[in-house]
Image (cartoon, rainbow, N blue to C red; front, side, top):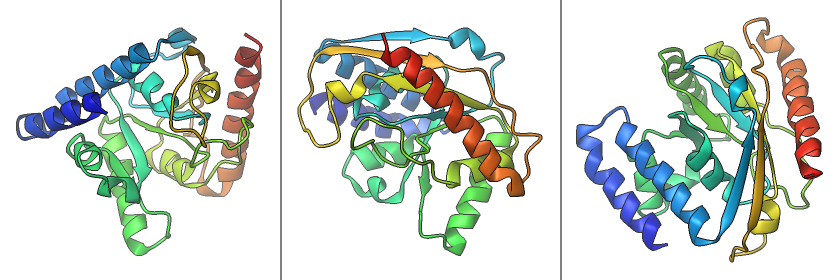
Length: 226
């Protein structure tokens, strides 16, 4: 909590001099590392060599527990912005820091403002900004991978950049959805091969969703076996 407050304030203070959010991302990366170290959580990452080039990319990961955020911030060696639910931006300090860091607000109501926000996000991605999203929308209640929501895939096809599928296992045991305290343990991550979005149009969205889901699920099963 203290680290969240301190780093949130640092992000807000650096924002006027750092409109691209580099300092903010470094603060977030440090926040992720501190959270993992504080609870003696070890992280094992494999497949980073599958990410070729500097991007931009859309990172899509399954969502097992709260520590997924810390793991990706602390161990994914790329600057990226989160696509997050609009309501999270109202949380004091945490939400303000996300806004200052340039994270993208997604309103699931399907309004005209939602469409415009999606178009603006796609433009930013085409201009070089990588983003990360949990396509399930929220943490899994039972450990299984939940059906994916369409928003992230619409954004991927609008921006025409590769999707990097990421599988996370072990974070639910650290801190599941229905618990407020964390345990020590190990979290395993596998980064899959990039999935090109250029061949897909909006009418092919379901096919793209299925391909990404199958890749994440397959790698999740592999790393779940230890």
